[in-house]
Amino acid sequence: MKHLIILTLLSTFLVADDENYPIEYSYGSHEKQKIDLYLGSSDKVLVWIHGGGWLFGDKRAKRWLRRFDNHFTDHKELNVFMIGYRVGENTAPYAVEDVLCAYKKIEEEIESRGFSRNDIIIAGASAGGHLALYLALAEQNIPYKNCLPELKPKGVVNLFGITEVEQTYKYLDKTKFFSLSNYVRRWIPDEKKITEASKELSPIYLVDNQSIKVLTIHGTNDVWVPYSQAKLLDQQLKEKHILHTVEGGGHYGFSEEEDQAIRDKIKNFIAEIVL
Image 1 (cartoon, rainbow, N blue to C red):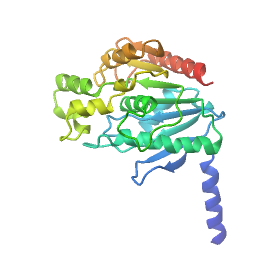
Image 2: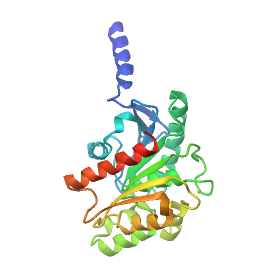
Image 3: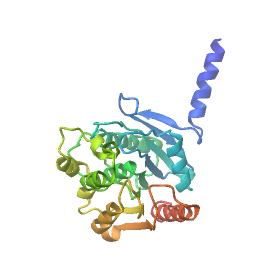
Image 4: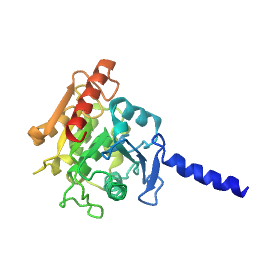
């Protein structure tokens, strides 16, 4: 029995270092405050943040792993950190606070594992795109100072992320029949004024004097995050922004041809910056 226990423990550690199985880290006491690391073949780093309207989702959910694999075709060359964060109704700004603190833990792992400090990409989709942008653009002037990032990424891959919270809130109120469909309304606590929350939580207000390159993928017929959110970011970032527009594209559900164009765009963007 003793030998069996020892062998079981050894196999656990061995599996954890396999490139196809994540190494998990905690950065807080909540069950969602965890990070998965998938080891790659280089010292470059990719940080991925799943979506779900800040209300749902998990870093190991099949739908999000599948979506990541579909668009990030060269990810095995990179050391991929996948961030889990607190989700649910009336939980804002927990998701923002969590990704900032998760990134501090990632910075520690970059140092301890000898990964490149200079070759970091942050990526996310939908609400994860919003969080990726906020994390990458965060500076000293943000209200959440407990976990300010030190290592600046070289670029952001933003798949149809929310860039201005209040405008998205108003769009959903106008276009959705059921009030429960307004995920922004459900995420922000009732006692919090939407204008105040938007000023604190919108990446668009962090753009000033930024030199980070951003690739945005967005469909013109997205009914959950309007295409105007991408255009707003494009106007602010100017030459630092690459906007890949999917004409008639929605919120995922792209054709194979559209998916391939997105894969190529992401692959070339990452290769130009870190590979």
